[in-house]
Image (cartoon, rainbow, N blue to C red; front, side):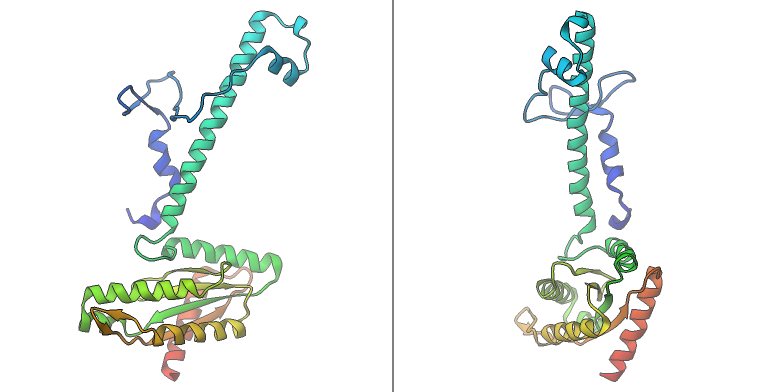
Length: 252
């Protein structure tokens, strides 16, 4: 399964009905057994009669010992469930972060970038503030791979990704669009300001220098821009930016 298609909940689910035995290994529960319990750094707090009376505002002399024990047991069980939920949510957050990030480049995966583009469309519609999508492509990457080899190809991609990441704002989002291209969401930037920024990035990347195996590798960059509009489909944004990219390169 491609990494872009992995859902965090699918990764967590296999452990939802398992616990560790004395050796530390997970084994499945049979029906009716205790729920999943993760290793805790501290035990669940023991509840007392005071917790029952303060929480339910019932005088202690109106509660029988059996009722008090039952309520305490329920309260401790709720505490345990809250802690387990917190652990699972933390794990899911970590898994989600790993899934969103590209394995080799300091950018988002294609899948995560498309999701962020859809979010950007909603943000533009809600706030009426501008955002622009940029398609940033290493135009001569095929030539570089043929001339210098696969390692040079990978080195160029990593160097370009790092340059772009280092020169973007925290509110901007960058992800991969394939072997030779990056997608950049320039938040709160209209098309004019976005173009100035992308031209600046183009100059930085092309002048590098980007080195591999003692050689300077010359890059040719093309870019395409498209202002994001409310209710716009992500595929339309990509298509428009791609068309603009080819027009720009012809004029270069």
